[in-house]
Length: 142
Image (cartoon, rainbow, N blue to C red; front, side, top):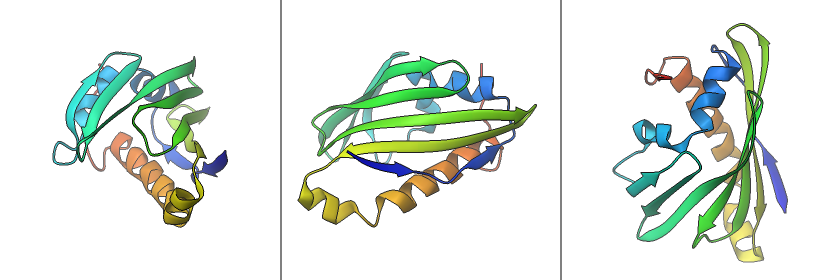
């Protein structure tokens, strides 16, 4: 498996608030881009959706309260992957977050994605940080 690690970003929230969001897929519906994703369904442990006619999803494999959530891709995916959200609270309202992707890809997919995965992971980390810091949207933990 190839490993990709995002840059570390700062989120001005308690690690517990961030963890509580990522540890429950039913809270994700407010972030789903409806113009790109169809038929989003979620429980606390699993979500399924359709992208460009392909049904896929995510399942939570492991939760380590306030520090890490591990996900696994499910459905008809072009490659197998594990995805982690890692959190480390340094002080109140000063939490560091990084994303880790472990992907098992065939050579063709690896060649197509090799220059896109790292920038995409870094961009996703930035977007999550902006969302939680209130720049892109207001996340309500309740």
